[in-house]
Length: 281
Image (cartoon, rainbow, N blue to C red):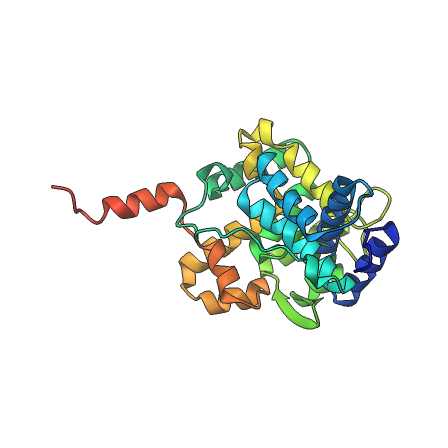
């Protein structure tokens, strides 16, 4: 068997492959980061199936959650498949399906509204509107670039991902806010959420700006990140319409199982459900 090693050339080629697959920018960034982390852990030693399994165990020893470990394994397994090294693939950890979510990471509607109020009070108009846009439409943070002046005028935007095109409808009230903001900032066309240099905002910048609101808004930092706004949209949509298939279409999920993950109740909600059974004398 030939000796295998993960070089930067391999990682670069892997990134090009993921782009050809039309993976999202966030997914590509994460996969490459995980593959590089594994390569750094190898420290130049030859790649073996045993080494990959040891890395898996080492991640658990470092305190990574099983879900995080599996996420990292998915990245390196994808790389192994791309490189034609399927013999090095590692089995993921078996995780019991969760009955409820961790309350410490669940953003409530009240906390979301506090974040908006705080952003406006601090003069962070762009950030407040951006959070409203994600939460009112359920788009991914990587899809914010599709919110343009033209889309606000049409009341919808089209997002292409993995060979599929889905149409996102923009509520009328949101469109009016977006156009008012664009006029104020003298943005005549193109992306609405821009940096001072006129470039589209990156996911890292959006994440950092949201985190900066936590203390002032009195919201735990563990709850404040862009994807939690998408979760809040999903839960609110489902409570209103009870249509998981429609919600999957809106979110752009190819599997209903993925959508159901968004709808798991919190531990507090689960406790109320148990109390409602009235099985204690």
